[in-house]
Length: 252
Image 1 (cartoon, rainbow, N blue to C red):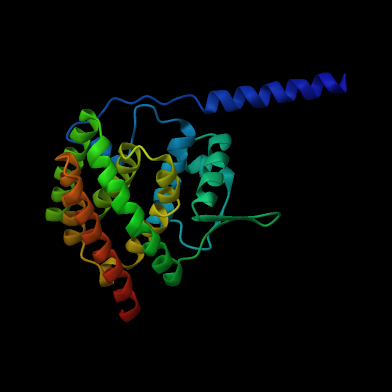
Image 2: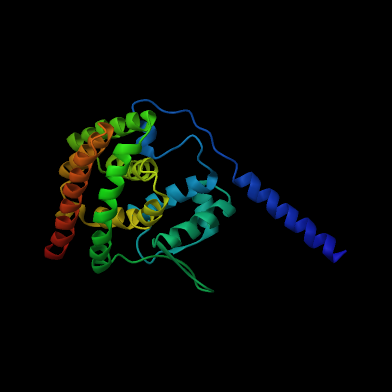
């Protein structure tokens, strides 16, 4: 009898996981809004939870050392606890949260030294992936790069920080996918969220949002044009700016 009850609970848990991981379908909005919001037609509830919690952390709505609760996040995002739990595990791998056994889940601290070490690796990987994306992107992906470039220039003209943040995330993901190098993509996935959060914390004092958005647009345009050399150079110019920005945070 006890074994039957345990089996029943296991089946119920599996049913909940399957239901909560059901793919969420959306109609694509106009004018590249989907790219700005980071939404995808095949996004699962776990993907959505990850994207939304990451944005809350990156934009400091959940500041460093905030104690996180699966229950409160589930209520805040209207998503079940299983996808929330899976998303937090992914965020822990990305370094944005720290899971402390028997103590809870904390948003990780922001560290300048960590950021500078991260940029050393990012420069090489970003160039490699930008060139790979220019060479291997599908026609559909090239169109998406053009759309992101156009929206990035609009964000530059309007100094729209939230649109820029979402487009930055969409561009990172698209480059990672279009480069067709799963090893580089995994390594980059550990860096982008930390980099965006660092930028968001300091850009008002030390950053130049219009310039940053234009540099991102130039990268997307070079990839859309299938110009691997130009894409590599645009990637280096972007990392040059990001390194300069990181050093300015010390002065401010």
